[in-house]
Image (cartoon, rainbow, N blue to C red):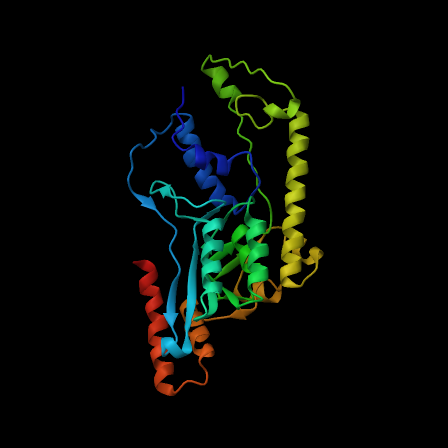
Length: 311
Protein backbone atom coordinates (compact mmCIF):
# COMPACT_ATOMS: atom_id res chain seq x y z
CA UNK A 1 0.00 0.00 0.00
CA UNK A 2 1.30 3.51 -0.76
CA UNK A 3 2.35 5.50 2.26
CA UNK A 4 1.73 9.24 2.39
CA UNK A 5 4.23 11.10 4.53
CA UNK A 6 2.95 14.57 3.61
CA UNK A 7 -0.81 14.70 4.28
CA UNK A 8 -0.79 18.46 4.87
CA UNK A 9 0.86 19.07 1.51
CA UNK A 10 -1.60 16.73 -0.18
CA UNK A 11 -4.57 18.54 1.37
CA UNK A 12 -3.27 21.82 -0.06
CA UNK A 13 -2.90 20.40 -3.58
CA UNK A 14 -5.88 18.12 -4.14
CA UNK A 15 -9.64 18.59 -3.72
CA UNK A 16 -9.54 22.28 -2.87
CA UNK A 17 -9.77 25.43 -5.03
CA UNK A 18 -6.30 26.89 -5.59
CA UNK A 19 -5.26 30.38 -6.58
CA UNK A 20 -1.94 29.26 -8.02
CA UNK A 21 -0.10 29.04 -11.31
CA UNK A 22 -0.59 25.71 -13.04
CA UNK A 23 3.13 24.86 -13.14
CA UNK A 24 3.43 25.41 -9.37
CA UNK A 25 0.50 23.11 -8.67
CA UNK A 26 1.84 20.48 -11.07
CA UNK A 27 5.29 20.43 -9.50
CA UNK A 28 3.90 19.92 -5.99
CA UNK A 29 1.22 17.49 -7.18
CA UNK A 30 3.78 15.31 -8.95
CA UNK A 31 5.97 15.36 -5.86
CA UNK A 32 3.11 14.20 -3.64
CA UNK A 33 1.63 11.74 -6.15
CA UNK A 34 4.96 9.94 -6.61
CA UNK A 35 5.11 9.29 -2.86
CA UNK A 36 1.46 8.31 -2.56
CA UNK A 37 1.86 5.65 -5.23
CA UNK A 38 5.24 4.47 -3.97
CA UNK A 39 7.04 5.50 -7.18
CA UNK A 40 9.45 7.48 -5.02
CA UNK A 41 10.38 6.58 -1.46
CA UNK A 42 9.07 9.24 0.92
CA UNK A 43 11.73 11.00 2.94
CA UNK A 44 11.42 10.66 6.69
CA UNK A 45 13.03 12.41 9.66
CA UNK A 46 14.27 15.29 7.55
CA UNK A 47 15.26 18.02 9.99
CA UNK A 48 15.87 20.66 7.33
CA UNK A 49 12.89 22.99 7.23
CA UNK A 50 12.15 26.29 5.56
CA UNK A 51 10.44 28.90 7.69
CA UNK A 52 8.78 32.02 6.35
CA UNK A 53 11.06 35.02 6.84
CA UNK A 54 10.25 37.50 9.57
CA UNK A 55 9.69 41.20 9.00
CA UNK A 56 12.70 43.46 9.24
CA UNK A 57 12.98 47.22 9.16
CA UNK A 58 15.18 49.77 7.42
CA UNK A 59 15.99 52.82 9.61
CA UNK A 60 15.26 56.15 7.93
CA UNK A 61 18.17 58.47 8.78
CA UNK A 62 17.93 59.09 12.50
CA UNK A 63 15.68 56.20 13.69
CA UNK A 64 14.44 58.21 16.68
CA UNK A 65 13.40 61.13 14.47
CA UNK A 66 12.68 59.69 11.03
CA UNK A 67 11.34 56.25 11.96
CA UNK A 68 11.66 53.20 9.73
CA UNK A 69 10.21 51.27 6.81
CA UNK A 70 9.05 47.66 7.25
CA UNK A 71 9.94 45.01 4.69
CA UNK A 72 7.80 41.86 4.77
CA UNK A 73 8.80 38.90 2.60
CA UNK A 74 5.92 37.09 0.85
CA UNK A 75 7.80 34.17 -0.67
CA UNK A 76 6.83 30.69 -1.82
CA UNK A 77 3.58 28.76 -1.54
CA UNK A 78 0.82 30.65 0.28
CA UNK A 79 -1.21 28.63 2.80
CA UNK A 80 -3.81 29.47 5.48
CA UNK A 81 -1.94 28.73 8.70
CA UNK A 82 1.57 29.23 9.95
CA UNK A 83 3.96 26.31 9.58
CA UNK A 84 7.00 24.86 7.87
CA UNK A 85 7.71 22.56 4.97
CA UNK A 86 10.57 20.12 4.52
CA UNK A 87 13.42 21.12 2.26
CA UNK A 88 12.23 18.44 -0.19
CA UNK A 89 9.49 20.84 -1.23
CA UNK A 90 9.33 24.63 -1.33
CA UNK A 91 9.40 27.61 0.97
CA UNK A 92 5.99 28.50 2.35
CA UNK A 93 4.30 31.60 3.70
CA UNK A 94 1.01 31.62 5.55
CA UNK A 95 -1.68 34.26 5.30
CA UNK A 96 -1.87 34.10 9.10
CA UNK A 97 1.82 35.01 9.47
CA UNK A 98 1.52 37.76 6.87
CA UNK A 99 -1.38 39.35 8.74
CA UNK A 100 0.51 39.05 12.04
CA UNK A 101 3.51 40.90 10.63
CA UNK A 102 1.41 43.64 9.01
CA UNK A 103 -0.49 44.08 12.29
CA UNK A 104 2.82 44.50 14.14
CA UNK A 105 3.99 47.08 11.60
CA UNK A 106 0.73 49.02 11.92
CA UNK A 107 1.04 49.06 15.70
CA UNK A 108 4.64 50.29 15.61
CA UNK A 109 4.51 54.10 15.55
CA UNK A 110 8.10 54.31 14.23
CA UNK A 111 7.19 52.50 11.00
CA UNK A 112 6.06 54.94 8.31
CA UNK A 113 5.43 52.57 5.39
CA UNK A 114 5.23 48.85 4.69
CA UNK A 115 6.67 47.08 1.66
CA UNK A 116 5.63 43.56 0.68
CA UNK A 117 8.54 41.85 -1.09
CA UNK A 118 6.59 39.34 -3.23
CA UNK A 119 7.96 36.28 -4.98
CA UNK A 120 5.20 33.67 -5.17
CA UNK A 121 3.22 31.59 -7.62
CA UNK A 122 0.20 31.64 -5.32
CA UNK A 123 -1.40 29.05 -3.09
CA UNK A 124 -4.71 28.18 -1.51
CA UNK A 125 -7.95 30.09 -1.96
CA UNK A 126 -8.78 29.45 1.68
CA UNK A 127 -7.81 32.48 3.80
CA UNK A 128 -6.51 34.39 0.74
CA UNK A 129 -9.59 36.60 0.39
CA UNK A 130 -9.72 37.40 4.11
CA UNK A 131 -6.03 38.35 4.06
CA UNK A 132 -6.45 40.57 0.99
CA UNK A 133 -9.44 42.32 2.58
CA UNK A 134 -7.38 42.90 5.73
CA UNK A 135 -4.54 44.44 3.68
CA UNK A 136 -6.95 46.66 1.76
CA UNK A 137 -8.24 48.09 5.03
CA UNK A 138 -4.77 48.25 6.62
CA UNK A 139 -3.32 50.31 3.77
CA UNK A 140 -5.73 53.08 4.72
CA UNK A 141 -3.76 53.44 7.96
CA UNK A 142 -0.26 53.22 6.48
CA UNK A 143 0.83 52.86 2.84
CA UNK A 144 1.48 49.22 1.91
CA UNK A 145 3.34 48.89 -1.37
CA UNK A 146 3.74 45.60 -3.25
CA UNK A 147 7.18 45.17 -4.79
CA UNK A 148 7.06 42.38 -7.36
CA UNK A 149 10.34 40.57 -6.78
CA UNK A 150 9.93 38.99 -9.35
CA UNK A 151 6.57 37.18 -9.53
CA UNK A 152 3.15 37.69 -7.97
CA UNK A 153 0.72 35.21 -9.46
CA UNK A 154 -2.80 34.20 -8.52
CA UNK A 155 -3.20 34.36 -4.70
CA UNK A 156 0.02 36.39 -4.50
CA UNK A 157 -1.43 38.82 -7.03
CA UNK A 158 -4.66 39.01 -5.02
CA UNK A 159 -2.52 40.13 -2.07
CA UNK A 160 -0.65 42.65 -4.24
CA UNK A 161 -3.87 44.04 -5.73
CA UNK A 162 -5.07 45.03 -2.26
CA UNK A 163 -1.98 47.20 -1.66
CA UNK A 164 -1.61 50.96 -2.05
CA UNK A 165 0.67 50.55 -5.07
CA UNK A 166 2.12 47.74 -7.18
CA UNK A 167 5.71 48.29 -8.32
CA UNK A 168 7.03 46.01 -11.04
CA UNK A 169 10.23 45.66 -13.08
CA UNK A 170 10.34 45.04 -16.83
CA UNK A 171 10.60 41.26 -16.35
CA UNK A 172 8.47 41.10 -13.21
CA UNK A 173 5.29 39.06 -13.63
CA UNK A 174 1.73 39.43 -12.32
CA UNK A 175 -1.65 37.94 -13.09
CA UNK A 176 -2.85 34.33 -13.31
CA UNK A 177 -6.23 35.51 -12.03
CA UNK A 178 -7.95 32.17 -12.14
CA UNK A 179 -8.82 29.09 -10.08
CA UNK A 180 -7.33 25.61 -10.23
CA UNK A 181 -8.48 22.39 -8.62
CA UNK A 182 -7.33 18.79 -8.89
CA UNK A 183 -9.37 15.75 -8.00
CA UNK A 184 -7.18 12.70 -7.48
CA UNK A 185 -8.82 9.41 -8.51
CA UNK A 186 -6.87 6.36 -7.31
CA UNK A 187 -9.71 3.90 -7.89
CA UNK A 188 -8.08 2.39 -11.00
CA UNK A 189 -4.70 2.27 -9.25
CA UNK A 190 -6.10 0.34 -6.29
CA UNK A 191 -8.00 -1.94 -8.65
CA UNK A 192 -4.75 -2.74 -10.45
CA UNK A 193 -3.23 -3.75 -7.13
CA UNK A 194 -6.17 -6.03 -6.46
CA UNK A 195 -7.30 -3.83 -3.59
CA UNK A 196 -10.99 -3.20 -3.06
CA UNK A 197 -12.05 -0.51 -0.58
CA UNK A 198 -15.54 -0.59 0.93
CA UNK A 199 -16.85 2.78 2.14
CA UNK A 200 -19.99 3.08 4.24
CA UNK A 201 -21.61 6.53 4.44
CA UNK A 202 -24.76 8.58 4.80
CA UNK A 203 -25.25 11.65 2.61
CA UNK A 204 -24.00 11.67 -0.98
CA UNK A 205 -21.61 14.59 -0.45
CA UNK A 206 -19.81 12.71 2.33
CA UNK A 207 -17.74 10.76 -0.17
CA UNK A 208 -17.15 13.57 -2.67
CA UNK A 209 -13.43 14.06 -3.33
CA UNK A 210 -12.46 10.67 -1.91
CA UNK A 211 -9.50 9.45 -4.02
CA UNK A 212 -10.47 5.76 -3.69
CA UNK A 213 -13.95 6.38 -5.18
CA UNK A 214 -14.50 7.08 -8.88
CA UNK A 215 -15.88 10.55 -9.54
CA UNK A 216 -19.58 10.76 -10.44
CA UNK A 217 -21.29 13.35 -12.64
CA UNK A 218 -22.99 14.75 -9.54
CA UNK A 219 -19.63 15.25 -7.87
CA UNK A 220 -18.19 16.84 -11.01
CA UNK A 221 -21.06 19.34 -11.15
CA UNK A 222 -20.54 20.16 -7.49
CA UNK A 223 -16.83 20.87 -8.08
CA UNK A 224 -17.62 23.06 -11.10
CA UNK A 225 -20.08 25.09 -9.01
CA UNK A 226 -17.46 25.63 -6.33
CA UNK A 227 -14.79 26.61 -8.86
CA UNK A 228 -17.07 29.18 -10.49
CA UNK A 229 -17.99 30.68 -7.11
CA UNK A 230 -14.33 31.06 -6.14
CA UNK A 231 -13.43 32.47 -9.56
CA UNK A 232 -16.12 35.14 -9.39
CA UNK A 233 -14.98 36.03 -5.88
CA UNK A 234 -11.42 36.42 -7.20
CA UNK A 235 -12.51 38.54 -10.17
CA UNK A 236 -14.69 40.82 -8.06
CA UNK A 237 -11.96 41.30 -5.44
CA UNK A 238 -9.30 42.29 -8.00
CA UNK A 239 -11.76 44.59 -9.79
CA UNK A 240 -12.59 46.33 -6.51
CA UNK A 241 -8.99 46.70 -5.31
CA UNK A 242 -7.61 47.81 -8.69
CA UNK A 243 -10.52 50.07 -9.60
CA UNK A 244 -11.26 48.31 -12.88
CA UNK A 245 -14.25 46.40 -14.22
CA UNK A 246 -14.90 42.71 -13.67
CA UNK A 247 -15.00 42.35 -17.47
CA UNK A 248 -11.44 43.69 -17.72
CA UNK A 249 -10.27 41.21 -15.10
CA UNK A 250 -12.00 38.26 -16.77
CA UNK A 251 -10.60 39.27 -20.14
CA UNK A 252 -7.10 38.40 -18.87
CA UNK A 253 -8.18 34.72 -18.94
CA UNK A 254 -5.72 33.93 -16.13
CA UNK A 255 -2.75 34.89 -18.31
CA UNK A 256 0.49 36.29 -16.87
CA UNK A 257 1.85 39.70 -17.79
CA UNK A 258 5.18 41.45 -17.38
CA UNK A 259 6.35 45.00 -16.84
CA UNK A 260 4.74 47.71 -18.95
CA UNK A 261 2.09 45.39 -20.34
CA UNK A 262 0.85 44.76 -16.79
CA UNK A 263 0.72 48.51 -16.20
CA UNK A 264 -1.16 49.07 -19.48
CA UNK A 265 -3.76 46.52 -18.31
CA UNK A 266 -4.02 48.35 -14.94
CA UNK A 267 -2.67 45.30 -13.10
CA UNK A 268 0.34 47.29 -11.82
CA UNK A 269 1.15 50.95 -11.23
CA UNK A 270 4.84 51.80 -11.40
CA UNK A 271 7.73 50.51 -13.50
CA UNK A 272 11.05 50.22 -11.69
CA UNK A 273 14.43 49.18 -13.08
CA UNK A 274 14.56 46.44 -10.43
CA UNK A 275 13.03 45.64 -7.01
CA UNK A 276 16.04 46.91 -5.07
CA UNK A 277 15.77 50.33 -6.72
CA UNK A 278 12.10 50.37 -5.71
CA UNK A 279 13.09 49.80 -2.06
CA UNK A 280 15.68 52.59 -2.25
CA UNK A 281 13.18 54.99 -3.83
CA UNK A 282 10.60 54.26 -1.16
CA UNK A 283 13.09 55.00 1.58
CA UNK A 284 14.26 58.21 -0.07
CA UNK A 285 10.71 59.39 -0.68
CA UNK A 286 9.93 59.05 3.02
CA UNK A 287 12.68 61.49 4.01
CA UNK A 288 12.64 63.93 1.12
CA UNK A 289 13.27 66.83 3.47
CA UNK A 290 16.28 65.17 5.12
CA UNK A 291 19.80 66.63 4.56
CA UNK A 292 21.85 65.12 1.66
CA UNK A 293 24.06 63.20 4.09
CA UNK A 294 21.03 61.39 5.46
CA UNK A 295 19.75 60.61 1.98
CA UNK A 296 23.01 58.85 1.17
CA UNK A 297 22.81 56.93 4.43
CA UNK A 298 19.31 55.71 3.60
CA UNK A 299 20.34 54.47 0.17
CA UNK A 300 23.14 52.44 1.73
CA UNK A 301 20.88 50.98 4.40
CA UNK A 302 18.17 50.12 1.89
CA UNK A 303 20.73 48.40 -0.32
CA UNK A 304 21.69 46.24 2.67
CA UNK A 305 18.16 44.79 2.57
CA UNK A 306 19.07 42.50 -0.29
CA UNK A 307 21.89 40.92 1.71
CA UNK A 308 19.77 40.59 4.84
CA UNK A 309 17.00 38.80 2.94
CA UNK A 310 19.39 36.16 1.65
CA UNK A 311 20.96 35.34 5.00
